[in-house]
Figure 1 (spheres, rainbow, N blue to C red):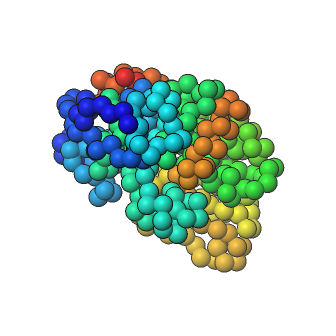
Figure 2: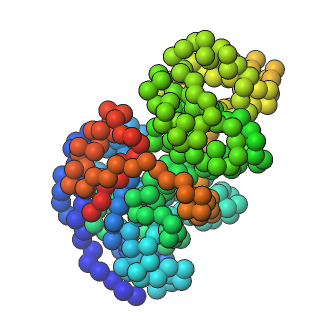
Length: 339
């Protein structure tokens, strides 16, 4: 077993809502199935903002955020067999799971009842080095650069997974609600899978981007006439935003047996008209990241089909500036911090 020091440089927030500051933090002990990575790049996700502010009550302070990590293996536990020192890998929202609960046993370890989150009770990717369960460190295909791969480890699989699960055949009509960090990838994946994609966004400002990404049509959701004209048009609506919406309007956009899938995190309680669900057999569901198998499939698919996030690169020491850009909704479309 190769080992390195237990301290690492990191950007740390000491309390909810506080800016990040540079400092030193202690890594967890390197277990037999663990690997240690030197961080090359880490994507920014809106979940990082929620964790910094402790919006979900999950955070443990001091906190080192970051869960779209690409790096190189520099140490490995004695039981690690599938990765080697020097290999380039990525880590997403989960850095481990129990691997014993019904979700894990069925292959959906993203639904583990005892999840180990990369930047909760663990040093996240805003650091020089991290340690994680090797089974949750995913080889990065040669066709993806560090900058391209990082956002895929959370944003990419978050939208790839429901498209694969909910649309087993091609040629469906998909509406992507919100053209941002998640939505701009969802448009690419849905189009690449052979679906007819409509981008649904607030205002007309991103329509050129949406078409360049593969959308066949665009709807301004501030225009009631456009929404009315699109009634009963979609087999799937993938909602990538966290805004509170008039869900009755969006259910009307679905055909009978259509599905409205949430991958953003709107208000904890949403209200929907039951008659749409019962009378037209519409489905309201959500999707949580993706399993290890799905992440690896998604990375290979992205490399093979040249599906890349639109990335703005910023150095790690500008992390607070980057977080403010993200909070202001000004990122087009993913910020990646590099060391």
